Image (cartoon, rainbow, N blue to C red; front, side, top):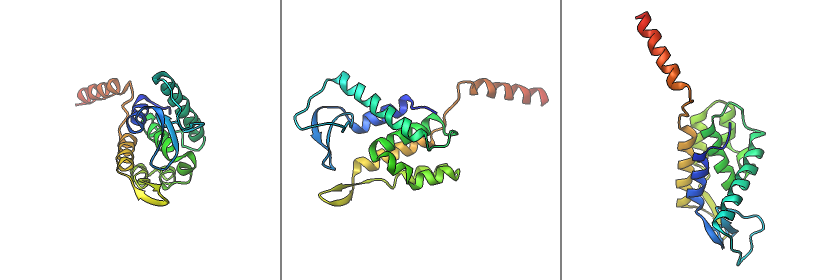
Length: 167
C-alpha cells in the first residue's frame, strides 16, 4: 500500500500549479500544488519547488493516514484516499463514513461516500463546488479501479493452461 503516480497525477490535475500565492475558494493562502503551510500573500516559488512541496505534503499525508487504514487496500485505493485527505484533511478522512465503510469491507459504499465531500465554506456558507464534485468523482474512480498485479498475466495464463489440460 503506497502512493502511486496515478494518485500524484490526480492531485496535480485538480490542484493545478500556481507559482504565485493565491487565496483558494475557502480563503486560504495557497501556492504550488495546493501547498498551504506558511504561505503568505506575495510569495513566489519555482516549478521545482512546487514539485518538492507536493511530494513532501503528500508523503506527510500518506504517513498519517496509513496508521489508521486497513493494510489490505491496494495502491489505487490508498492513493485516492491520500488525495482526499490532502484536500479535506486527515481528520475528515479519519471520521468519515468512507473509512467506516472501508472497515466494513464495503468498498463501493466507501467510494460513494467520498463523493459526499463536495462542499466548501465560501463567504460563511457551505456550497457545492463543481471542482470538488469532479475531484471526488475522480477519487472514486481511482479507488474502484482494479489494480492489476504484475504477475497477474502469468497467473491467468497458467490457469488457462490448467483448464485446457483438464479439459
